[in-house]
Length: 343
Image (cartoon, rainbow, N blue to C red; front, side):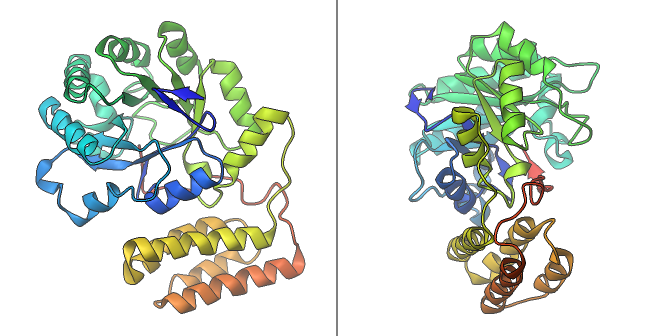
């Protein structure tokens, strides 16, 4: 797929999710078939550029290009500065967050709260695009502020006029948070009104759903968020289905064990042993979600305080599964979990 000047493996995107899409997760999803992975939100507050969290979020060492960094904030000048700062440090695409519904973001009029102020949206987009003329700028939004005010088509036209190069739309309003089901009519309307590459997001949990959303909306790609938690192979499943119309067999228990261990090992390396162990807990929980004995396993695993014990617990859990069923049924481990914050 050609996307804002880059050739991607396919039209499958990893949604930016705070606390989830760190460098180890992005690298894993790309390895498992994603065409592009957008980073966690990076603050536009220059006072925090040197914080450990911001530095980790901006760490792209060894990551497959293109590098897409999402910035968040509400002040045009600060966002422009953040765009320049990240572009100078290796970002090849700057993505602006106007999709996050979290209260701690929206309460400072950032994220999807910005969709209430279309004039401010225009000033932000214009400032960021002009700040990094050599770097493509993309935008992520929701369908609107609430169900009575679905202004995504208007925001999309503003974005196109300001020089935004591509747009991702989550099929819920800010007021919806993650409740109910995503709707795709508004996304289809956005596609009809602008010529920007459009990425559809929201409740895409299977290869069949990905194809349905692409066909229904006319979108150029799909963005996967919660459904990839504990199931990064969803990208290869969708890629294969879109290319052949056939479903891949469910992964072997031995492969899930291998992917899980590879992932937690990368977390240990990236965060250090103590923080890595704690962050690994939620990912291990997602990998084992819905599997036989997983509730008791998670309860015990979350009490472990040493890396060796955590790794041994993963081996023991999957040894038991492998003895009973070498391949998971398609009904297992297929639903998305709940991230700390999704953009």
